[in-house]
Image (cartoon, rainbow, N blue to C red; front, top):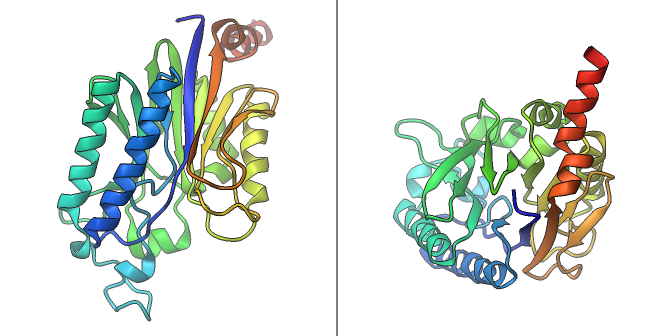
Length: 277
């Protein structure tokens, strides 16, 4: 593991209509701009919010039309445009030499899609996919299939875990990642208008309770009571945060190898071994 590993968290604009190719391109352009900022800052991995390319609206997708909520008609989505944006993001990851954690809807033949996170390596390859497990009532009733498994991956010796949407509200998922030896949990959360103070508390509490680092990637454009993206340290404090005015931006946090050993994963492992011996 290098002495220092820099990670980047972003807050970006969330658009809600996957039938509109122009909107998908706008989101893709913004994601790639933030990726370039990440590379300039010397970070090895960049983390995006839920819906960074598109966070499909239940009304846009309803097969009954926008005035009545019903099962989602996913044939309306412009899957070709969506895949093109993801391909461009993967290509830029390779060009910049960075890892990209990018949420997107994952299409499944003859079934509902998953609300997912793709992990794209610095070689431009999708090496992992996480599917949201703790779906909201709307998501599970009308929109998505339910994910089943935790997912971890490593970059430069740092082990990352993934969480999405309402996963953030369930402490047992963070405990599970603790058992899997995770150093950092990457939480992607699309925040609606209104207050989200409880999400801020959940993230910092999860970091402190599990002596791990937690990155929260949230939605841009909602400064009044909304969330600010950031990375929380193992004491529950914010180590770095994006622009507080809600504008699309990047924040960089440095993970120090000695801290990962002294107060992170190795500390937890040593303590448990002493207790059980």
